[in-house]
Image 1: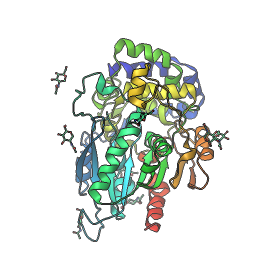
Image 2: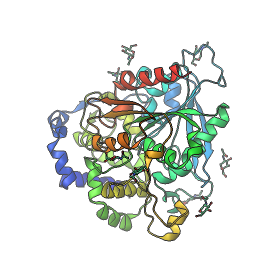
Image 3: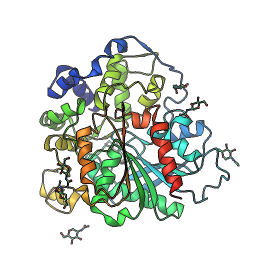
Image 4: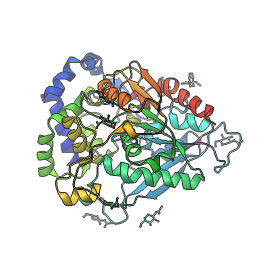
Length: 421
Ligand SMILES: *[C@@H]1O[C@H](CO)[C@@H](O)[C@H](O)[C@H]1NC(C)=O
Ligand SMILES: *[C@@H]1O[C@H](CO)[C@@H](O)[C@H](O)[C@H]1NC(C)=O
Ligand SMILES: *[C@@H]1O[C@H](CO)[C@@H](O)[C@H](O)[C@H]1NC(C)=O
Ligand SMILES: *[C@@H]1O[C@H](CO)[C@@H](O)[C@H](O)[C@H]1NC(C)=O
Ligand SMILES: *[C@@H]1O[C@H](CO)[C@@H](O)[C@H](O)[C@H]1NC(C)=O
Ligand SMILES: *[C@@H]1O[C@H](CO)[C@@H](O)[C@H](O)[C@H]1NC(C)=O
Ligand SMILES: *[C@@H]1O[C@H](CO)[C@@H](O)[C@H](O)[C@H]1NC(C)=O
Ligand SMILES: *[C@@H]1O[C@H](CO)[C@@H](O)[C@H](O)[C@H]1NC(C)=O
């Protein structure tokens, strides 16, 4: 089923829609010619098919896997790098400041450890003396379990980012605070990891006490102006719904199905990377900005996409169409009550967020589009926006996978947290 969905997306990308016409006008196709030249990949990279903890261990860092249950029964897995190589003492319980990293849509904890140690946030923060925790939202590779529901049941997949915001953030952050004996932590979110946090902070002031500072990378709240492939998904949302109703609506882009499909399209882990593969990728996040380590593609593809629910995707499509920061319409009073304790679909307002916030945005980012980012900037209370860092030439992926992120983003955040001690 999921392979069908990917196939559909690829078809839409090729066959066209307004969104795709936008795409064709943008520099995305300029690199097409050189994409057609076969890229040489180091297919024997030992990290291909390693899990996040295995990659962490491979670089000689300590790692812990910690599970936590949400109030609605999902069993989530977090990965922890309790200390780095440069730590003067190596005790896991040494009360280092906690930095919690939350991945974006279709991604996982692997985002933060995917490049070399001095280019990846997870390792750099551990080496800088922090206790590093990497979250995994429900439904991805590492958080596909439930106390009562079978993952092959329809009910397991009945969630969107709104449910992650209501349940997963509490479950993970409360667990981290309990295990570290601290009362608050620093939060670094990417993309959907900022959408969930902005929304949570806007509706729950008690939760805000647990977040010392919020670093928002490629922040997303409204999706009205997104470009690229996901614009097309928004535009064809009715078509997608029709598709789901006929072909199933549970899991979306799990790693295994993607790999099958990727193999079919030649995005496999063999020596040559098919241009279609890279084209699809950059048609989602923005043009190739040349700060991507092409030889890491096989490792990234073995981890990403990490899966979510189809409904999460439809929810995002609904937000593209409506232009609103809102909950998903579950289509019946009973289900809306189950998710929102109300028959009304919540409309959120970030003007009540009251945690010091640091924005890192990119001008080549098609998902956290500069126009939608402007909404965030101007609707957050000006007292809490501590930094508004606009990074030139950044697409949506560069914040986690880009080679310049270490200098442009991670080192400045480390300095800000150090100064806060
Ligand atoms: C989560 O729930 C499962 C199944 O009910 C249980 O075995 C496990 O101990 C719980 N985990 C935590 C961390 O509470
Ligand atoms: C601390 O642990 C790191 C990583 O395991 C290791 O490289 C380092 O030598 C250890 N330092 C001390 C002081 O034990
Ligand atoms: C990472 O380390 C290599 C070699 O040790 C060095 O050349 C490079 O500049 C470092 N990168 C960063 C971002 O510090
Ligand atoms: C989950 O459902 C599948 C298919 O219906 C079944 O094969 C499997 O045994 C079930 N697993 C559990 C733990 O019940
Ligand atoms: C890209 O990743 C490979 C390992 O897959 C590494 O050997 C190489 O140094 C990296 N390139 C850069 C520019 O960091
Ligand atoms: C649900 O809403 C009712 C009133 O609308 C309120 O009394 C109750 O506390 C809410 N329950 C939860 C779990 O938020
Ligand atoms: C959010 O609340 C502020 C302050 O009450 C108001 O000025 C603004 O219009 C609201 N925004 C939305 C999108 O409702
Ligand atoms: C919220 O953002 C919109 C779009 O950028 C802007 O028109 C509006 O004035 C902002 N609202 C507030 C309360 O600043």
